[in-house]
Length: 217
Image (tube, rainbow, N blue to C red; front, side, top):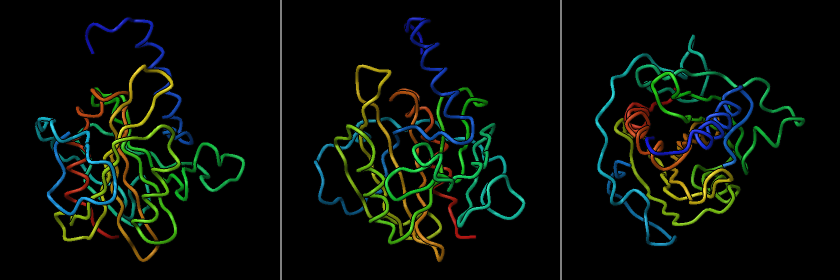
């Protein structure tokens, strides 16, 4: 991110590293597939974003024997590193491991690939749409929220949301997005944040790879 003051970047990097420790989610753009927009402000953060180059798949996460045991599995972008969250249901850590109805289960770190951010997997009880809406409502200073009903490349019905969120470290909102699917074990939310909008957009190919390869385990 050329042109940024070293002090600001150091502070931002430190914040990102804190979220990578295994218990701390961010408190919390290729365009999504055409589908049915619904009941939200009309602006969508990703509508004018040029798609980033595709990424190579390098392994997967979610299935038996992988870093995170999840109700779903998906392919990982090259050099992205998954890490299971330790004891996420411990009430002592609820402020760090819960967002609305969702509990964080896995964080896939983008730093080894050169970006600052995470692709996080959350689980929640109830329908996918309700879980996703509760997840977004629990994030502070959200705006430009747009939900879409879609199907993944593997044919799974899903709900995707794009929105902007406030940041304590930046003077402007940053783009975020998330995807929710229903499984026999409840809803699963796949969330892509990022340190800022620039980082978010650079990480979108990894999110799109995960979305296109998502399947039930």
